[in-house]
Image 1 (cartoon, one colour):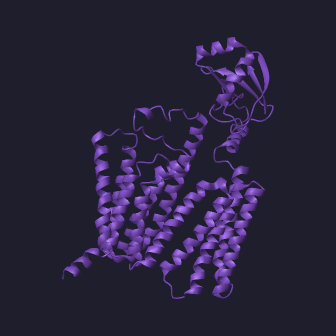
Image 2 (cartoon, helix red, strand yellow):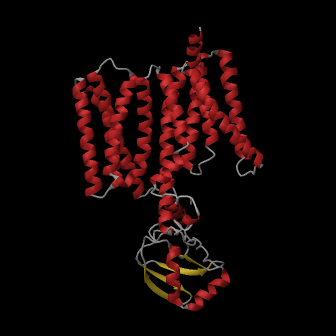
Image 3 (cartoon, rainbow, N blue to C red):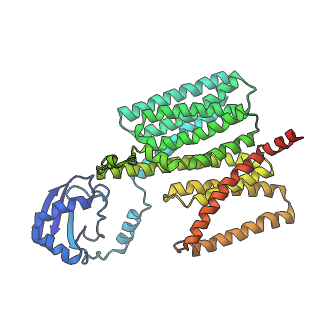
Length: 453
C-alpha cells in the first residue's frame, strides 16, 4: 500500500505493508523528512498521524485495520498540536456521516456474519425434520450420511478454498447430525435404553465428528476445543448414568462436580495447548546455565494470545455444559440436590473473580445464574398465593435492589487485603463442602447407616 505522508511543507510517498502496526512503521517513515524532524519530536512528546478532519490514528493498529486506502494522504502533527476537526457547513451531511460511521453501522463483514449464522441455523434445522422421514433405522442412516457429507464438505472448503469460517459452520452442523445419528442408532439397537445411554451415544458421536472437524479445519482449533470439552462433559455424565447404579440427577451431580474439578486445570491446559512450556527448575549448580536463552518476542506474543484464546474457549465449554446440566439436577432431584446446586453456584461466583477475560468471567456467572433461576422457578411452582409472595417474590426484589446498589458502589473501589484473603478461605471451604453434600445426594450416608444396622 502506498501512502503520502505530509510533514510541514514536505511530502513523500512511501510503500508500506498493510498488516504491520503503524507504530512499527513510523520509525522508518520519519527519517524520510530529515533527522532534524526526529529531534523536534522530543520537544513535543513525539508525532501523531492523522487524516484531515479526523482524530489521530491508533498507532497500535495495522494500516488495514485503520481502513487506510492506497493513495491516502496523512499528516504528521505534534502530539500536543493535533489538527482540529473540520466544522460542518452542511448539517444534514454531518449527521449522515455520523450515522454511516458509528460503531454499530452495518457493513459487509456483518452481512457475511449474518448469512453464516442463518446458514448454520438452516443446516441444523434439518435435525428436527429427520425423525419424520421413515423408520428409525432409516433416520439414523440419513443423519449419519449427512454428517459425513458435511464433514467432507468442510474439509474441502477449508483446505481447497482456504475458507475456515464457512468450513467451521459445516463442521459444527456435522457434529449436530452426528449426535442425532448416535441417539437414533441406540434406539435401533436397543429400544429400551434409557436417557443416559442415549446421551452417551449422542455425545460420543458428536465427539468423533468434532475430532474430525478440528483436523479438517485447524484454523478454528479454539472453537473446537470449547465444543469438544462441552460434548465431553455430557458424554462423561451420560456414561456415569449408564454404568453406575445411580439416578439421572445423581449422575448429573457427579458430572457437575467433575466440571468444578476440571475448571481448576483450565489455565494450565490452555498454556500447554498454546505450545508453550516452562523451563525445568535447576536441580543443582551445574544446571543453572541451562534453559536461560530469551524467548523471541514474536513467539511470546503469538503464543500468549493463543493461551488467552484457549482459556476462553475451555471456560466457555465448561460453562455451557454446566448451564445445560444444572436444571436436571434441580428439577429431577430433591432438597439436597437443590442445596448442592446452590453451593456450586456460590463456588462459581467466587471463582469468577479469577479470569480477566470478559467471556471467561461470564462462563462462571451464567451457570450460577441458571442455578438460581432454576431453583426460584422450582420453589415458586410449589408455592401459591401469599407464600409465593413472601418466599420468592420479595426476596428476589430485595436482592435485585441490593445488586443495583452494589453496581454503583463496588466497581473500582479498593478493598482491604484481608477481605481478599477472607474470600480465598471462603472459596476453599465452599469447594470442600461440595464433597459431603454430593455424598448425601448419592445416598452414601443412608447406605452406611443401613450397613450399620
